Length: 224
Image (cartoon, one colour):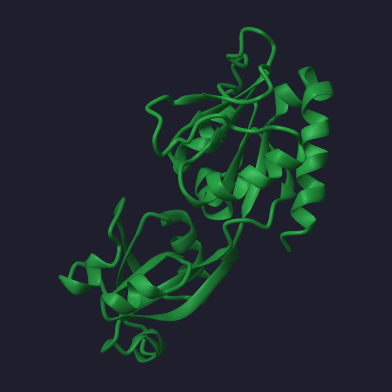
């Protein structure tokens, strides 16, 4: 299902989340001749202007980016592969892997937990994660029985207080795991962020969108 894009002047709305994805997207926007005029970390605005009056940036939660684009509240956006897998990607055109915000999705446990033996012996594991679909598919493919516990933040806390045996989470440097005496025991997949485009907007606003998509694609090659 797609609703009409909510840009009354026929301009473009880009959905981005604060943090690393926002910062890593700025050079790609610059390559397309677009400069965001306000910093989302200091501005209280949720819709930010750019140097192009026809392009605005919608600041939303990372997990909400695909939904805003799917339903046409934004014409295009940038979302991590982890978020897109959980969302399902319905109604989204994904033309470019931008090679930004690179990290990995992994299984981690307390340093003293023998994960390999538990898996080999067929133990039923309790796994805390916000990536329930990805975790379910991963462990099912391995034939491992798990009870999945959905959390929305501070995954590292779950094994420390006995809520879970393991966590499935996105790992960048691994510093947070080490600080909490957790170890990464299995990499599920590499993660990067992708450009996502509303399918209706791609048809109705192709003349505006296509040059930006192409600029992003060219600039992303230098990121790989």
